[in-house]
Image (cartoon, rainbow, N blue to C red; front, side, top):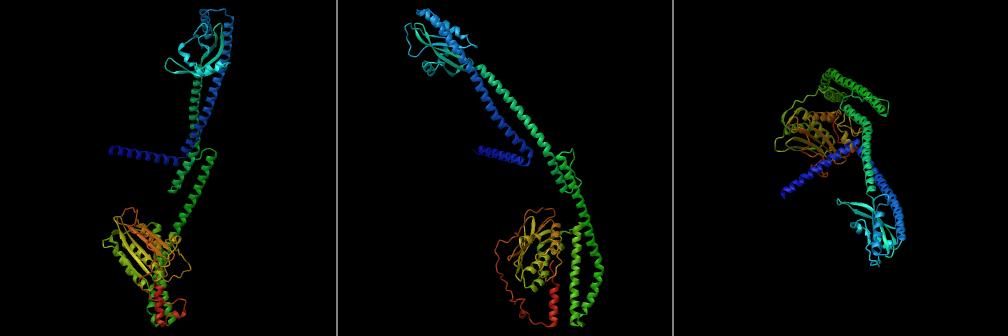
Length: 572
């Protein structure tokens, strides 16, 4: 039983696999579908036409032969009756001889050989001469059915289809025709003629075989024509799909062959013209992109020299700000803050230009990701304190060693933490580290204003902002998350975002533990499963920012220092 069950499972698996392969081939081949549909319709039409024609031929042959048989038997019956009427036999031996002679004469009197039976009519048994009748073949007498004998006794010519047994054990179609005759002295007899329709059956079989052979040839011709037509139609489309795939892979010089002047040639020319236009536009865009990257890189490098000079002068002015009056002192502090932002912007532009030029290099080493996370949290702690946010870090006890570039990973985490603190609205920012055998993941979750799914899809775009009218207190460059995404891709990892309005946002960084590992899953979930909860960390109550009475009274120096601290905060 175990062996049979295993064999049955194997058969089911193979059948299911074969059905799937056929289904896949059916869905992927237009030519196969067209040929199969055409052949199916053609076979159905030929079957219907063949059945109709075969039935019509059989009816025609049968009725034509039946008409001939009825006419012949009617003439033969009249001849036999004329012979009986003209006979002078009066004794049993003469009448018996007369019946045999009539039967022998009528057997060969038709257009074809036939069997003749002269039987006493029902109700006439035991006549005055006690004659048994005559039959050309006694073995075929049982073919005269009682129903036919009864119908013949009612008068007129009657016939019935019969199956004539053959010598080889088969049967042949035939017709039995009967009519009453009057025998001198002995009374009424029934004269039956048995005609074989085997020749008509052979002719019908020949015609049907001819029709079948013609149908096979027609189906083959139909399939060949359909294959040829579909090949001429599908091949250019298939070639266009192949060329389109090659173009999508970057082979911009790929073209379709142009032959003739028909619709397919027009399609090929139109496709090639489109490809030429796309190639020209792509080349122009590549040249423009190259010029743009070179411009950004050159400008960024060229601005470093004057920025260094301005930076030195600004630091001198900023160091001597204590001797200035309040307005000049405030200007010196604003100058220092904007110089910091300008320097960060130049650094981000240089970094993004390296990614665009493909010059970014990964300096990977085996490091514990937990240490990098703690360093990034320490750097963001002061900003979180100023913003009234709480950083909650959860790390596993086991080491999370991975081949990473610590500088780039720390920059990713720092950008995510600063962005979370900026949008946390004073709530808790949760940092979670997880690892499995193939990957290490870090999630940064805040419970602030959140973002929509469309905003989450664009959050890594360069210079993109969810709300352009929103005041930016930390003054980021707009390139931090874009650079973070490029850093994650450089590691072969993922950087993903999730958000819902009013429920906060979550960012997940997933990195492979070893270089060359292709990620298929992440140790941590991106979307939180739990509903939003109220923060357990007490937040000092503040008055509305729009309420003038809610602003505390500050001295001039405290006001300038607070403004300076607020201007130094950044979101990358």
